[in-house]
Image (cartoon, rainbow, N blue to C red):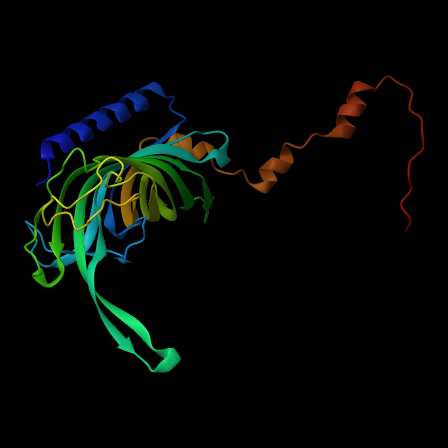
Length: 309
C-alpha cells in the first residue's frame, strides 16, 4: 500500500519551493508548472548476468486486477531565463513511478538439431518484482522554438534521486504464491540515484503548454545490496529468488509522458521572440552617416572607386 501521507508531504514541500521561487524572481523570467502522466517499461541489469525480460505490464494488484501498463505521474516545474535563449530551462520533477524487473529463475532444456547443429533451447519460468518509487529528477532542458514560437522542441538531461516506497512479487503461472515484498535493511536499498535523458515537444496555446515526452532513466545504484553486504539468500523466503545476491542490480526505466502546464507570465516569453529581419536591419550602424557628421568641417580628399558600366 502506498504511503499517501509521505507523498502528500513531498508534494506540499515542492509546491512551497516553487511558490517561493516564483515570488523571488523578476517578472521577465518564465516559470511553468505542469501535471505529467503516462506509461512505460522497466528493465534490470544484473551482474553476473541473468535472463531478463523488459517489463511492460503489471499483472493486476490491490486495486486493478487485470493486466495494465506500468504507470507514472506527478508534477513538473521549469524556469526559463530570459537571456540567453540557447540555455533553455532548468527545473525539478516529482514523479510516482511503477517499475521493476522480470527474471528467469528456472528453466527446462530442449535439444534440437543433429550432429554439429545440435543445440540447447532453454524455456524459462519467470519471477517478477514490482517496485513503487518516488523519483526526483533535477533537469536541464535545452530547447528551440519553431512554427512562429508555437512549438517548443526540447531535449532532457537529468540527475535523478529515488526512494522505493513498497514492492510485491509473483511467479509465472502461480508456481509459488505471490505476496508483498518485505524490505530488509541488510538486503534491500530504498534510496537510489542515476541519470536520465530524453526528448519531446510542447505546443504553446497562449499561456497553456501541452507536451509529449520520452525519457530513459539509467540507474547507477542497486536495488539489492551486493554479496559483500548480504552474501546469501538461502535463508529468505520466496520473495528473494537469488541463491547468492548479485554484485550489481540497477534498474532502468523507459517512460512516455503527456503533460499540461501553465506559464505564469507571458511577458518573459514575449522577450524571447526573435526579431524580424527588417527590424534588425534598421538597427545596423550607418558608417557613412556617422563619418560625415563627425568630420563635416574637415577637408575632403582621396579617390572614389568608379563602377564599371
